[in-house]
Length: 214
Image (cartoon, rainbow, N blue to C red):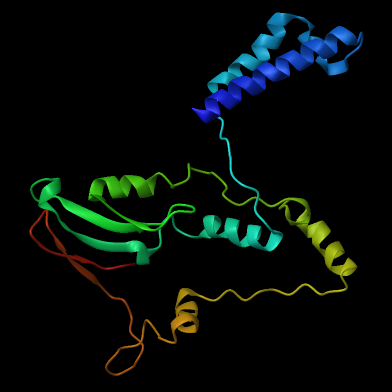
């Protein structure tokens, strides 16, 4: 409801300000097209059909905190795996109904525990999946894709620094760095293992299924 109200008030405000500006100025350049009231409505009315998103929150205290706060939303999942507490059947939700129990920490409130049907839990997660081709992180200025080849050398020259290529580690190296455990090492003989086949039980077919990755 907030974004609809904000959208209506903003468009009404712009219409009033443009109309007042035209009344006090004889020549208005590109705004001349709005002297006709129908032109004003034909431009702004379609905006009422577009969803607007209103971000209403407190100002973040410092630049460092703001960066760490926004980075979590850019790269982390909507819920940490450690917050998923339980997954089992609960008769109070219906016969043979599987449910997920997880902890939630609302802003400025104590942590609480939620229990929902597994279908509802999946629905809560997939609403965070971005639309196709939606860019979650955008780069501007010297980091923009169309300008960084020309501008970044100038930036590094001004800072008296040299550009260095960062060697990207694969998932195995990152896991070893983080946990000191090689995920591909056999726990018995400690030799490297290779994934050759995935075996899982299919409830639908009531049998084991085999999958060999390419």
